Length: 164
Image (tube, rainbow, N blue to C red):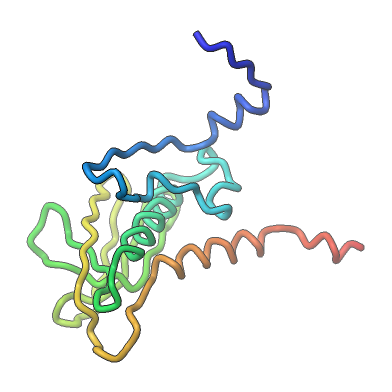
């Protein structure tokens, strides 16, 4: 039994925070589970998020972490778990409450591709593909996704200076 005493607010906050854990063979490996949630994700309690919204936000963390490990010659793509339909270069991701997550992109042949998936069947394998255009900087969607969440949160916050 712990001797730690917590306030009601601390106890309530700890139940609202998501739990994550990971162990790697490489002690220097860093993965999404080890990083703090961006402020834009932490503001709204998990209990108030739909399954789709919470899956979408965690996918953003995994995508951003994966991209941080890529060199400038590769971009992120995803393989389809449980099928032989190949890979899709990730160019967009979204969700539709309460339970749909959508991926937008192109396949290896450059064909426009979209995957619409129910969160109960969500399986994503992140892959690194060579960039399509040699001189162009690699596309990094994970960072754009986090920025979009932060922009959305800022738009939802009341402007305290306007009521001045």
